[in-house]
Length: 436
Image (cartoon, rainbow, N blue to C red):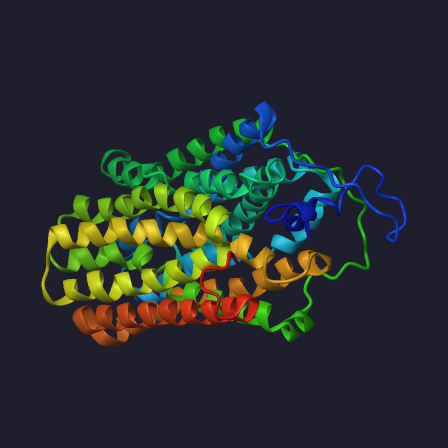
């Protein structure tokens, strides 16, 4: 899988060398990353555009959830509506092994161009949809599948140009998905051109960005021949306790991670917030994510990825307990805004550290299969997390329902952080100062 070429450790560049036909028993000279250069940093810019077009759009799911609940899909429960975004999130991960293999074999451009076209086409079709199943097909499945190819290309190619500053570079790339533009852009345009006109403008914006991205994103590693014998997913890897624990912990964190993105706006409306301020809360989460996706990645280069990841996951869950749950009983504009910014920082840190930690959870020989297996499990978590939160909300009503989904999210994330911490202890024991 192509993601094996991107994050972590200088030795992951040894798998691809100019003389790829030599015997496996012969020593392979590592291709040392140039630490950027003009091409490398331009690639980072292009990859950041890709992340903005995919994860950045997904960060606006709260705007769409709120609109669908109040207007187009008002006859459906929040849980049923959330399947649109659950499918988007799931398909951001599930086809990743396929796109990774294609990226290895053909390079980024043949992957980026059709996936970009699919994303733009899917949004254009969404602007024509009036029924639930149509929105599921266009916005949920079509956009999600295309976004996966763009996301994989961005994350892989950016990491290939760096070694020592890889955490910083990937942090900058993932920060592209945190730009506050989409929620504000969508909210402002809905009042001027209507919802469907807004979706068309979003498609136009993504299309323009992807034209530039297709020129800027370049792979550094030599292309590989398609190997039919390579396993895409290998569940025997769970015999490795470190990988098994890390995957289980990440599954739990991802279960609860997206609830504030999806339900914070509707909760604010339910508590008397204005429509504009409710939408801006999503932008505030995204604004907090910008430093959250850059600074912790840079810190992890110094103190260790697992050390940073464990702290981040636990703090993310605790932020819900200490900052969001009290809002259920005592409405406070300042308090909810503060939570949105803090949660944005911490959730952004988790997203930027997730794949680098996966790469560190096993050996280089199994890196490709490990990424494919990890992503297949994460896809299940993304597919089920939001519908579970929506079902809790629907069952509990306006007050108890929000409290229930808050507790679910907090417990899932704190529990996931603890499990990841156990995986870290398995790697380094009780030596808390050890860089892991």
